[in-house]
Length: 191
Length: 292
Ligand code: SF4
Image (cartoon, rainbow over all chains, first blue to last red; front, side, top):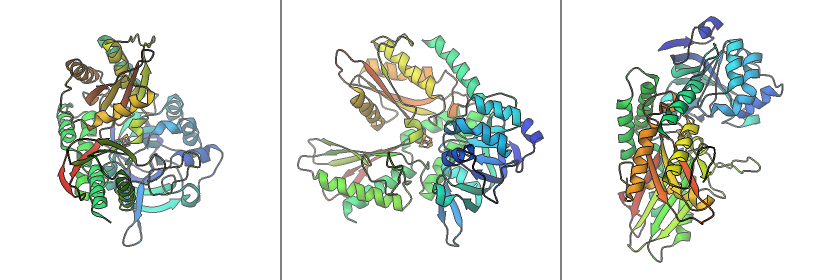
């Protein structure tokens, strides 16, 4: 397990390779469909949010207010990333992301952007809402709550040892492409 | 709250937060099968921890609590209208209590009224039967895995699939290949051979009511089911598509008659978070026993 602490440097990201298991500690921002479309259309991040050296999580969490009136995350599994494929490359380029967490993998343009700008795609275990929520120790802030609604807002998470696997590295490799090719070749043997 | 609503709320709670025993057993089997130290084994470990945690905390196994599908077997004279009302109320209550996510959206406006009740939600299938008993089965089916379902019309030239068992096998395995890990595998397939476009998909979902360890009474289909699972598990797709030994935990295949002109094979994919439970109710609506 490789420890990854935010902000992440380009050198740290470049040293990762496909198949590495990482544990992320620090600040992670959520962002899904609405946020990606907004940024793609030229929107700016709200004051207080910076993706420089940062990690973005494709996630629509379930958040409640606890007894002390603070936010508490009760379920936070990844959502399908491929929906952000039209936008992700640009968000990586313009906002300095070093990591994107999600599930299901992403396409060629994201693989290219990861290589060019120094970013990795981190696959979390889909459906593991409870285990992943346990890693979110604090939810200090939320942005765009009014505009986008709770699941689509930018939530700021303080995470400790959030587990994920590098499935697209910063060298143009994609585990998704590899597994697809291998499984295609295997299947041909059994037809 | 009346008795029936209480029972249905408890059914929803348990379905959303506890994986049924047969599925749990299959997941533990997969965890053992994966090679220690691989990312596939790590993924299965996290899945196993997640199942335990959800149960202890009585919180949803996965935050996508899915389509809410009730299957009701009831005797003659059963009050279906009353049941439907109770089911809707139980769904609203379960949503307020957090056993279900606010998960039902107006398809045109995108509005989510936060109740999970609206056109097409929850889904209810009634079936009349001879015994006095009422049994209610519930499946919660997530969106990510629903998106990787597929329907093939045979013959399919590209896949060299003809209108025979081998053709069915080819398209089912193609669906597994196309899905990769995107439906939160290891998955379970529900398949219907035949029917029309609507009944085919519907019946493919009904296969999820079967227990994983059962065998198909039709020997040809039983053979096909085993073959699909064995072959899929040789493809190396693995949990989450990370590569590995378990791509499928099961495959269940049903058959409906078709028109001479049509030959559909409909495939529904269920993620590892296979949430299915059932209860037998007495006449007052009290839970008599759990079905899975
Ligand atoms: S496919 Fe299943 S496990 Fe994955 S996110 Fe959807 S409901 Fe959860």
